[in-house]
Image (cartoon, rainbow, N blue to C red; front, side):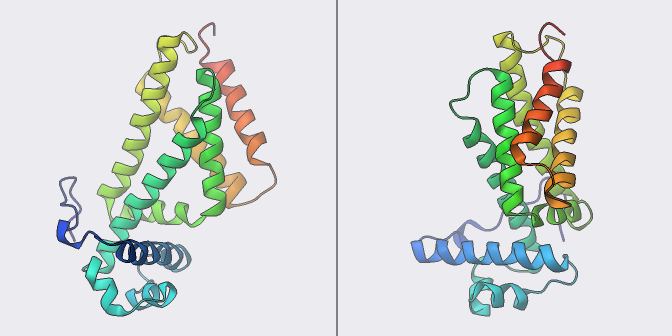
Length: 207
């Protein structure tokens, strides 16, 4: 299995061209999330994925050549869906702190509906290290862009660095793990408010 950062994307001629094809691909990816989430990469199987998806085995090979390939596609898919959930939640919010709170809330709500994302992303560190690294580096880049915009608005302190980004991202990831995946004893709104208060006391422009 190729794991380098320059790994090629799946062949373009396997991209669905019809609505039916897109729905089949979505079913396969959703089924793969459940299969990998429940069993882990090594115990999961292609037949398990197609059975959960309610599709023929041949349909799988229309889009993917192997279990490794659908796993790579699934990590990209989940990463993109997390990105969209955070981005959409932050649209129309006020200052930079409000946008960070909304983005975290969007992430936590997504995790609540898709708790398997933690097992899948964590396992990618060993199954497909390139996908694992791309997921976190792309997330950090998006967060860094938001923080820079907050600096320019005068909401955040001027000396924010990439290390601050990774520290904040780590906080968000572990809040999701402890209070969404492992337990449900704090509402997502309370978690987002707690994290936002932490930011306000730590990276506000006048701190």
